[in-house]
Image 1 (tube, rainbow, N blue to C red):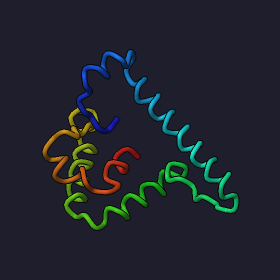
Image 2: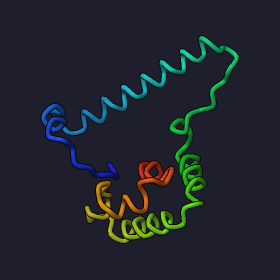
Image 3: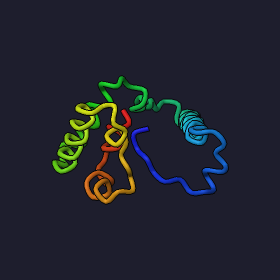
Image 4: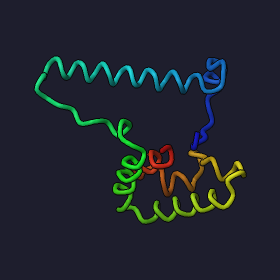
Length: 121
C-alpha cells in the first residue's frame, strides 16, 4: 500500500490478520457498485453506463489522473520529487510509503483530485 495511516486500536483488534479488513472493504465496495448498477439498469434499461476507471487499462488510468492533475502545479512538483526519490532509492522503505497524516501531504496532495489515485495505480 502506498499510503500509511494510523489505525484506531479497535480496528487493529478486529482486523485479525494484516490486510483482511482492507480486502473485505474492497469486496464490499465492489458488491455495492454491482448492486447499484443493476438497480439503475432495472429502472432505466436504455441507459448504458460508461466503463469504470478501474476497468480500464493502467495506461488509461494514469493518463486520466495526470490530465486532472495539470491544474495543480504544486502537486505535480511534489509527486515528481517523491517519485524521483523512489526511483533513486527503491529499496528504502521511507520512499515507498507516504504518511497521509503528515503536514506535507495535507498541504500539497490531500485535496488534489486524482493525486492519491495516481499513486495507487
